[in-house]
Length: 269
Ligand code: NAI
Ligand code: 15L
Image 1 (cartoon, rainbow, N blue to C red):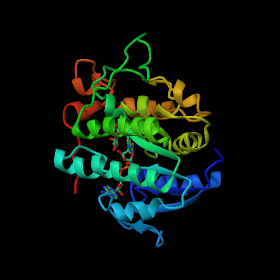
Image 2: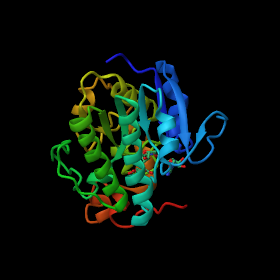
Image 3: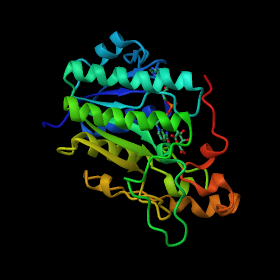
Image 4: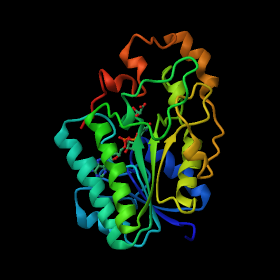
């Protein structure tokens, strides 16, 4: 497969989309932007809804690959999740199939496995093939997305790397994030590896930096050529002084998904 050059970035107006539209062009990509909201500072961005099949098909037409970030990124009612994340992701895959787009990088989430107990002490890292344990309807929609990706590879030859992102923000803001943080620069490194690795079929990877307190195995991400350069440990002293160590007796501290297992943040719209 020739290396992709033109890439559709869905969710371009969101937090991660805004970071990626700054960082991905340095790898030589020409980005086409798509979001239901206008993307600040990008007047050419396509404003469209994943629910609008014609708009999605037009958006993918002619691109080499898609980085699919659009969707509800927190917990919401099942009806809202169904529309944006489940039907929306289906529309995206159908459009890719129809338009012959060969590679998608899908923003899955740690919340697909959010109820998995986090490692403690000498416990081994969580493997990528750990059973799914979604912690919310949101996490469930990411399980759907991963399975949809598998179907479209097996049946239609559309390749996907599903990235179970931890927390991708400029800095970690909680003690949990010391384990699951992915720096934006490492996020761009991982997306670039996911866009360019040969023969990925459908590959599932965890997305985080090389954190000292890492909870999961980055082996399948490294196998794509991903070499993380950042470590959240530089933020540890400050965050631990403010918040203290995680309490294993608190369910929100005992599972990968953090407070999504107890008191998930709700999508505002
Ligand atoms: P965000 O909420 O800031 O951005 C999501 C974007 O998707 C928004 O700009 C929104 O307008 C757009 N969107 C929502 N529904 C849409 C629809 N029906 N049609 C078109 N656009 C729609 O979320 P963020 O943090 O940027 O995350 C991006 C993706 O990565 C999401 O899929 C999220 O689930 C996933 N993810 C993000 C993590 C993170 O740490 N930021 C962690 C794990 C997963
Ligand atoms: C996610 O999936 C969310 O989209 C993001 O906003 C963060 O909450 C992240 O997970 C996390 O687990 O920290």
